[in-house]
Image (cartoon, rainbow, N blue to C red; front, side, top):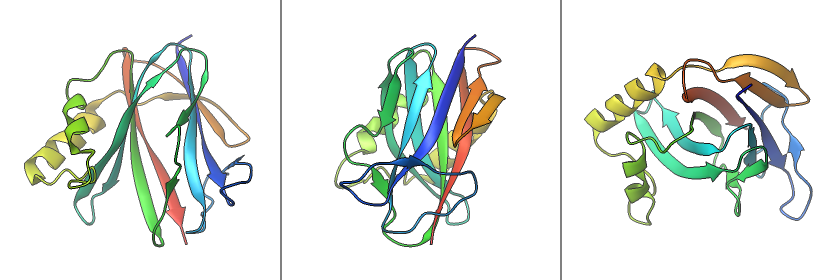
Length: 164
């Protein structure tokens, strides 16, 4: 079976251990977080933060996943909230690099900070992501979601993260 499993890991103390977040739980703004992702086959994971109400879309990067291994995303510095709010993450997985998302790497610099500034490009990217096959849930245990890949060698899903 071709599957991808992920869990949102929360780290309350930068020097302390991380623990899986329970579905629907809120983080504190002082918490940092990252994803643990395991794919049965190697591939690429693209992360974008989306706030349609503010019409903002930011790339958080693309990450190459090793088959069957636990991959920490991002590897080094975890994500964090600088103020309370909701972060909708688009997660797109593909066996091969996605030509539609690869060019976003150009925005990962100090000047652009990952922001997709062109409204037409934001709309095109949202439409592309929404058009990818959605994962078929396989199981959910202890904060880890596992999904089966259906509909081809790529899929996308949304993950909501909230901090108060």
